[in-house]
Amino acid sequence: MVILAMAVPAGVYSFFSAFHEANDLQDDQLRQVAALVLSRDLPPATPDHRATGKMKDDESKVIVQILAPARNARDDDGSLHLPDDLHDGMQTVNVNHVPWRLFVQSTVSGQRLAVGQQTEVRDEIARDSGLRTVMPFMVLIPILIALVSIMVRGMLRPIAKLSQEVDRRDDQDMRPLDEQHVADEIRPLIGSINRLLRRVADNMDAQRRFLADAAHELRSPLTALSLQAENLAATDLSPASKARLLPLRQGLNRSKALLEQLLTLARSQNTGIPQASQVTQVSLHAVLRRVVEDSLPLAHANQIDIGVEADTEADAEVTLAAQEVDIVALIRNLIDNAIRYTPAGGNVEVRMHAQPGQVTIEVEDSGPGIQEAERERVFDPFYRVLGSDQDGSGLGLSIVKSIVARLHGRIELQHARSSAPHGLKVIIHIPA
Image (cartoon, rainbow, N blue to C red):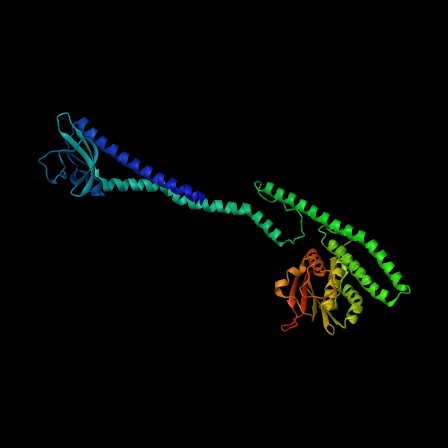
């Protein structure tokens, strides 16, 4: 648009400049004809086709005549009826409603010489000259705009790739952006963004370290309190004292579970690259079997039936390159949440499907489910669905989301059934 905005005024100026210059040149030609006639004492007669031959355009001829009052009409020699009171110099006169450009000059003998040409022909020549001047603008400006667009698009292509890369990242990925394959003009901006990302990553790491350190510091006194509560429960207490001791022990157990969840959350949100010794080929069948066996006592206590379905191609062992602790925490939190929010007599279904390049884990329960308006909020730490009377810290799905992001997967929440109670189906897709 800037090129076009500059080219249009320049083209208009060039056109009118060439137009006026062509008219001035033709005025000078009329002066030169008059000077030639006067200097050589030539007869002031307008040449006709008998002397010049047939002309390509009769209107382009130049008339040369003496102004005389007796001449009141166009004669056979091609003379015009011109007023005898014309002033000396260049002027435009209408003759029989046809505009003529005339140069009038007095001779030494007192006669007045007129040299002229129709303005229509002169303007046509001037317009052609102006258009030829503007023609390069009309041809080259679109080409220039196309070339500039291609160049700018090529220069901005690395930025578009960076934008797509940033859009694909999860909210925990603070790796610096690539500064090597971008234009020199925007490299300082990329450097500033990378420095900002490092500061944000340092701040997030500090918060996670504080969370982990606080959980570690609180674990020891809570463990000591739990042992003391166990020892106190083993003594001979009155029924009233035992009734008051039971809520204390339950509160200590919940606090210990919360600390473990906090530690798991801090570990799952770690944005650093795991060491090679920490990443192994984790067997999903083995982890699923172990987690289900550990969850059976809680399921039996709540009268919940757990079903497991694990199908793979050719019954091959499915493995993922990950930290085993992450896979265990992922499946354990999904099953634990399903058991806690399923009413007595309900059921929990765990499924694992393996396709080329992807593993899908589904955990479906027969509980109340989660409404669509709250499906984004339930991933926030400590958020719990309103009306829920189950014990919990509100960290389970936050941990699941963080682990799935570390594994470059995605998570979906759906209703398990179309009628109430809808239940909840959690679907996790992990690249294999």
